[in-house]
Length: 338
Ligand code: KG4
Ligand code: ZN
Picture 1 (cartoon, rainbow, N blue to C red):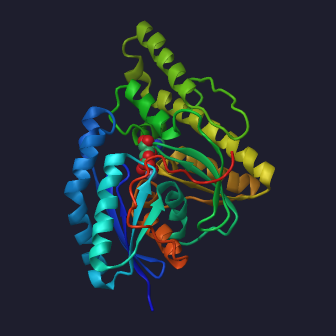
Picture 2 (cartoon, helix red, strand yellow):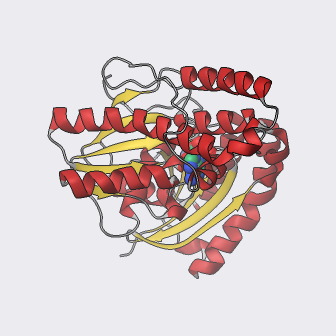
Picture 3 (cartoon, helix red, strand yellow):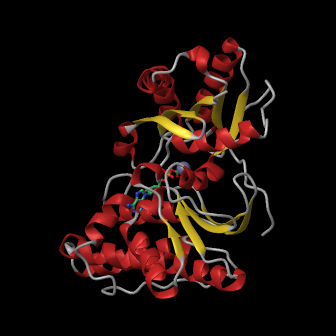
């Protein structure tokens, strides 16, 4: 008998639904929220309201595109955390109501584990164990992935996430939110060594990005005082230098973990894995050091429901169903020692 799941993602500013059947994604629908652009960051209340508006059309479209009847579904999987409380509440409440009406179980999915499981949507799929550098707007983690569901966080940021560092430095230059993709695109025409920025060496596999942001703020202040058009005149070089610095910090710790564990299957996941500089740095390690490198397709880097569906599918096989009193878990973590 085949297993068919509906998956829902609503942790941040993307309302998404996907259908998975026997491990194969049948559709992957994402409704993005442009409303936050003019505020320079995500406004949680506006995100919740937009999820509320989008969720039913997105689910209807997913079922239609997958050519699936509601009664074909075996379970509903949804992101329970981490994320914004009000945003998560929409997806979790919808999933509970939908599953309960159909008398099928609901499965709660950890958004950060799901980012990693995006590598199991398409081929080639990594074999276990592998290392994953998970880099998004809210997280920067080094994870040892032992199986589809068993993952250990061995290092993470002690302050800002790297996506946040991209977005905040972009904002300081007057670029709109989210600034990460814009820095990436300007960086392509710039010199990464034009402006050196200091980095802090953190212990073990920990990261810190708040110092880079502060150093960048003083760098801009000093240079725009000398020349008010400094940013406009040097935008590609500034972007390339910031991106180079952030990627250096990520790659330094990643290389250390590979050396310490001897695991050379290495994946990247999360929104920042769309960054062309990071993708290039990973490809270089494949060419020079023989790493087996796994880079997700662009559509599976940023938030989507296909990754929630894959996580939900493996949890379904383990009969890992949630209780009906399931509620959002904004600070949900991946287990494991640091
Ligand atoms: O995973 P994601 O979609 O949402 C969270 O769970 O946070 O990640 C969003 C983050 C934002 O900070 C955004 O600026 C960053 O990913 N991002 C990028 C790129 N594309 C998205 N950062 C750098 N370069 C990119 N090409
Ligand atoms: Zn995410």
